[in-house]
Length: 226
Length: 226
DNA sequence: CCGTGTGTGACACTGAGTTCCATCAGGACG
DNA sequence: CGTCCTGATGGAACTCAGTGTCACACACGG
Image (cartoon, rainbow over the protein chains, first blue to last red):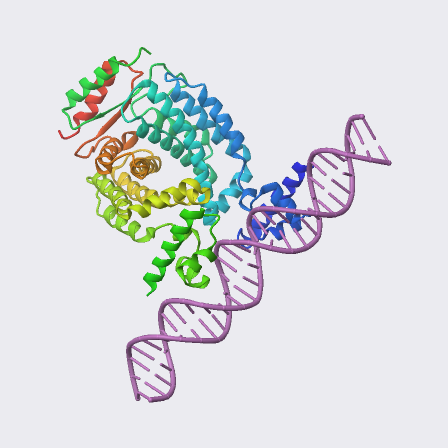
C-alpha cells in the first residue's frame, strides 16, 4: 500500500513535470492526479525535489561495504568496483534515469542538487582512499585522496552522461577504459587481474630525468613487498 | 545609495545568521534590522541564499579572460593562474569568506549551493582544456579535459578549505604545491608535447621497479630540462 | 468488544518569492 | 518656478512549498 502510493505519486509527478515542466507543476496538481492528499505527498517524499531523486542511502551503504573490503594492496580494484555499483544503479533505472537527466538539465535547482548528491559518493571514496594512502605512506595524503576520489567520480560521470545522452551503446566498456585512465595511468596495461603491490608514486620532474628515475626506483624499492 | 543598502542588508543578515542560525532567521528580521522593506531585500538579492554568496560573474569573467590567453604550449601556466584568481578572491574576502564557510558547513542547502557554484569554475577550465587538448591532439579529449578541470578545482579547494579552517598560514605556498601535483596533464595528457616547467608523473608500480624507472625516464626525456 | 498502531485526509499556519502599484527623491529641461 | 522623467523604495496581496496538528478509518491481536 505505502509502496503503491509512492509509485502513483512518482508516476504522476514525472508525467506532469514532463508535460508542463518542473516549476510550472505544483504539488497540488501532482496529488490531484495521483488521487491522494497533499499531506500524503509530503509524508511520502518530504520535498518536491525528492520525488525525482533516488534513495542514495542503500547504494552508499553497498559502496561503503565494497570499499571496506579493500586493502592497500587491492584498493584500486575496490575503487573500480565501488564506482561500478553507481553506474550499475543508473543503468538499472533505465528510463527513470533519463527522465531525471532531462529535468536536471533544464532546472537549475535540480541540477545543483544532482551535483551535490555526487559528493556523497566522492566523500566515501575519499575517506577510504585516505585510509589506504595513509597505510601506504606517501606525502600529501589529504590532497591525493581528494584527487583520487574526484577523478574517479568525474570519470564515472563522464561515462554516465554519455550514456544518458545516448552517445554510447557500450557504457561498460567506456567505464572500464575510463577507470583504466584514472586508476592506472597511460602506461600500464589494463586487465581484470589486479596485481598486488600496486602503488602510486609522484615525483617532480624539474630534476634531471635520470635523477627522477633513480628516485622513483628508490621509492619503489622501499614499497612494502607486494 | 544602492550599494549601501546592499551592504546594510548583508551585514544584518550575516549578523542574524550568526546569532540564530540561517533557518531560524527570516527575511523579515533581516530587513527590520537593516531598516528597509522586504521588497528592497528581494530586489537587492532575489533570494535569501544570495545574501551569502558572492557574485561569481566578474570573477568568472576574469578567469575566462586569463584562460583565453593560454595556448597549447602555455596552458598549464594559464590554468594555474586562473585557479590563483579564485584563491585570491577568497583570501581577499577575509572574514566574510570565513562566515560563509561556517554557514555552508552547518546548513545543507547552502552547502549544496556552494558545491554547485564551484562547477562554474570547473566548467570554464574544462572548456578551455578541451580546446587545448584538442589542438594538441590526444586520445579521449573529453575525459582528459574533464579530469584536468576536476583535479584543478579539487586541488584548489583542498588548499582553500585548509585556509578556511585555519589549518595553514601559507595558503599560497600550499597552492603552488598543489598545482605542482596536479598540473601535468593528468592521466598523462598528450604525451608528445610536454610543456616546460615542473611536471609530475604518476605511475603504477606493479611493474618491476626498474622498469617503472625506465618508463619514467623515457617519458621525461622529451621534457626540456627544468 | 476493546485497545493500538498505521496510513490517510483536512485544515491552519509560516515563510520565501512574485507582482503590481504607489510614493518620493533628485536631476533635466522649458 | 513648475513639470516631467527616472530610479530607488515601500507596501499590499498573492502563490506555493513545507510544517504541524487533529481527526478518521481500517487493520491487528487480546
